[in-house]
Length: 388
Ligand SMILES: Cc1cc2nc3c(=O)[nH]c(=O)nc-3n(C[C@H](O)[C@H](O)[C@H](O)COP(=O)(O)OP(=O)(O)OC[C@H]3O[C@@H](n4cnc5c(N)ncnc54)[C@H](O)[C@@H]3O)c2cc1C
View 1 (cartoon, protein in one colour):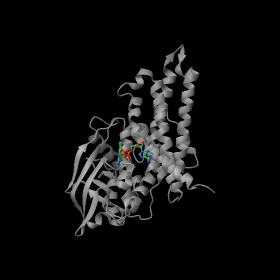
View 2: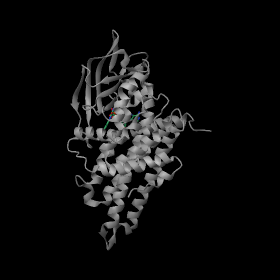
View 3: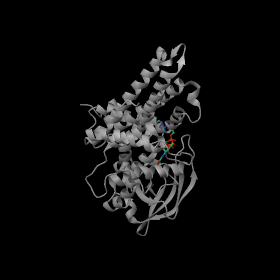
View 4: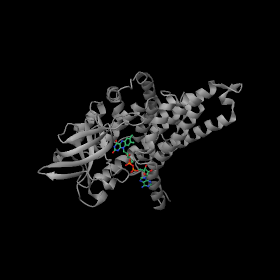
């Protein structure tokens, strides 16, 4: 039984607690029977089920309510809860938020109406296309270009490691429009998957399967209305979107870690060694204590960041970087310890902790690798952020 005592922390309101409990009940019933053999089909089915039952409504504000904001605590609680049950369900949920994020945060009313109604209902799948073969962490080095072609924009270049690549209905694509050097010359575009000139050139297989692809843009023409914000706003849009969603990556890691601790506690109580349960051995207790400590520290950082954003902070760059860095690194440690406490069973293919061991790994790389988060935190510390 997962520890839910954190729900009484002052970061939350009654509606958050209720949301977490209801989603947990839904996930217990709805996710137990998801067939994961075909990753694309499972992802589509999960988006449809999450949309049908109303859980994607929190991934973007209603399109006709310009003052409505994303509630980051609800996003984080949703991801933590779904990740504890099923990593692919968390992925399906998270990508609707991140993929549509630039439209939610910076889109025009027409753009919001065209896409958010569908992404929130689970009838359109969204993707966020930033990374390129030669620019991952170094976003300012993006070379995919968008040039004017009459009233249109014409995109040429390549993107890689794009989640939902191959199954998405819409991609938000970041491309160089050249208003200035490096980060100052990028813009964001809404590109429907069926747009001529956009093709999926490779499907990528990862250690924890989810839809991933390499994309090619070859004279890919989109109307002038496809740009989000103004030309040159792309870097700001990408960073502000990641700022909101980065803390939720920490929340997903937290969900994985909580599940790993639950599994460890269960096996330590039941497995008999040296004349009693494993849980009686003090060295084992030491591991369980370290795991619980790592989890609580992660939860404090994740929900501090989410609360700060919801409380009106313009940016939470430092808090989100700390939350993501600590929660993902700690989850890896917690899951590794859980595998260890399971003995040989822990590495058996298909065992829940073996699955968690694979699922958590990419979280330390995407949406800003751990060392990049360290750089972000150090910059904030050196700039005196947070000093009285
Ligand atoms: C499963 C998965 C899903 C993804 N989904 C998406 C998606 O939906 N959309 C999207 O746009 N991208 C996505 N990505 C791409 C992801 O964001 C990049 O992989 C990530 O930003 C790292 O870029 P890179 O792989 O090019 O590694 P590099 O930038 O080459 O970095 C390699 C390593 O070098 C080190 N490093 C790099 N820069 C620094 C620095 N400044 N200081 C210190 N060390 C550094 C780090 O250890 C880093 O891990 C996904 C990746 C994965 C694995």
